[in-house]
Amino acid sequence: MSAVLDRQPLANQPLQELDEWDDFVATRYKQGKSEEEFRNYAHDANPRVTEFYRQNHRYQTLDFIRQKKAEYCGLTRGQKSIWEMADYLNTLVDDSDPDTDLTQIEHLLQTSEAIRRDGHPRWFVLAGFVHDLGKVLCLYGEPQWAVVGDTFPAGCAYSDQIVFPEFFADNPDSKVPEYQTKYGIYEPNCGLDKVHLSWGHDEYIYTVTRDYLPEPAQYMLRYHSFYAAHRHGAYQHLMNDKDKEMFEWVRKFNPYDLYSKGADRPKLEEIKPYYDDLVAEFFPDKIAW
Image 1 (cartoon, rainbow, N blue to C red):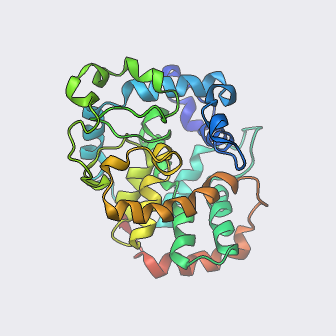
Image 2 (image 1 turned 120 degrees about the vertical axis):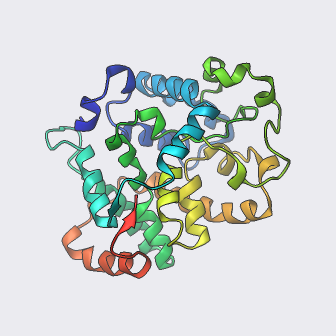
């Protein structure tokens, strides 16, 4: 079990591993499923995943999201390199865990190597490598429901395309009439940059890396967990033309995120020189986190 999860209160750890959420999402959106099967998410969820979503939907309020953006998006936690943060993320996995012997870096490399094999641009490969580094939020003491999970807008009506939408009944925002209209606090087609999505690793890694990566990569990182939008077409009424154009890149990225986990174990010693060059091409030695 992740050592960091052992240190958190039991109420904050419905998942045994953060990977349980990844596995659920991959099953829910597995290739070849019909739209009707997509809605049968309860069949694919184990009790821990269900409890995770119950907490996620209850506690991700607009006020909470704004608070976490203020806390983390100023990037005041010091300067570290991409590799240092990847090594730090590795501490999420305890060597005694009998269920996996893959490090977090190896999970990241499975994604990026699948992208590289398919001949995509170097920045696309790099997006695959860094896309889950925001999960260091767990190491900052954040509960699972504030780190992973399908992201969704707060401050407007919840789409029924969000997994377990019935759990939003426990969210205090559901009792605020202004927040439960189609547009809520937003203007029609205002653009997703003006929309507050639920807080988690997507928004954090986007914020950390946005000054260094091309715009399509920024969209991949920021919205790769926004499944209601890029898999079901929800919230088109909040998107502007740029969002709709860039979401084609999010959709290109998504299969690598979901389906690379079972790939061969990367041989880090063989491919690290490539990634050293790749990281150095886009990032300075140290960046703010």
